[in-house]
Amino acid sequence: MKIIRLTKYTPAIATRIRELLIQLSRSGKDKGEIPKEWFEDIINSPWHDLLLAIDEESGDTSVYPYGKIIGIATLSVIMGPGIKKNAYLEDFVTDNTVRGKGIGSALWQEMLAWSTEKGCANLEFTCGNGRETAQQFYKNHGASVYDTNFFRYIL
Image (cartoon, rainbow, N blue to C red; front, side, top):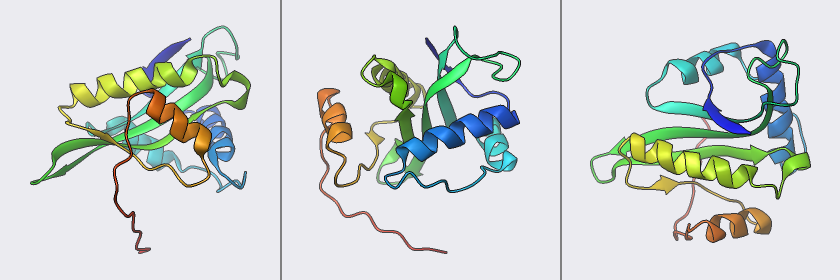
């Protein structure tokens, strides 16, 4: 297993990431195809990355150019005059078939390295109520709960 940054788009990669996001969804609901433009924006941005946990020994490399994707983490740098730079974790999931085998921990270590490389002071993220296993993972890896309210305004 290795962790890499997404550097190219293929429809197979988009499909596999979509499958993993369905596993991440509490409802198991498919939110639809991820546009190619989203992948291109991530690949071309110095402030965003999609980390991929790859099982090099499984998966047809003609379909998955890197090997089979068994986990992902989407990271962004957020900036403000008060916070300067922080990293923000959006999507973090490992395939159901490999949970508990250290894939999440390997991704976590790479997220910390990425955040440090970008000059960030903190790695921030949300974790919904009812996700006790995920919350315990974060606590076991040194994260602490930051008391705040998360708001969303739909544009």
